[in-house]
Image (cartoon, rainbow, N blue to C red):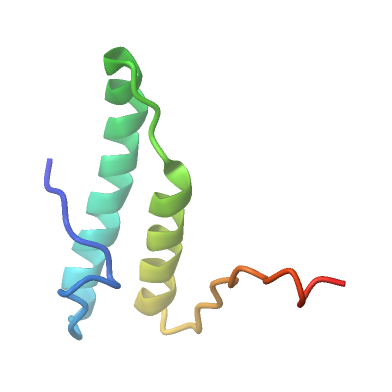
Length: 78
C-alpha cells in the first residue's frame, strides 16, 4: 500500500497521464483498504477528503475543469 500526498501538497507538479492514472488507482485502493481495515482498529475513515482528492485527480486526467465548492461565510448566506 502506497500513500501519496494530495495534489494540493508540495508535490503538485505537472505529471504525465500514466503517473496520474497510477495515483488515481492508488487512491481507490487506499479508500478500499481503509474501508476494510480501519473499523477493526476502532477508527472511521474520512471519505470526504479522499473523494474530493479523487474527483480532482479524475478531472485533471480527463482535462476537465474542477469546481470545488468553497465554504460560505454568514454574510454570503441571507
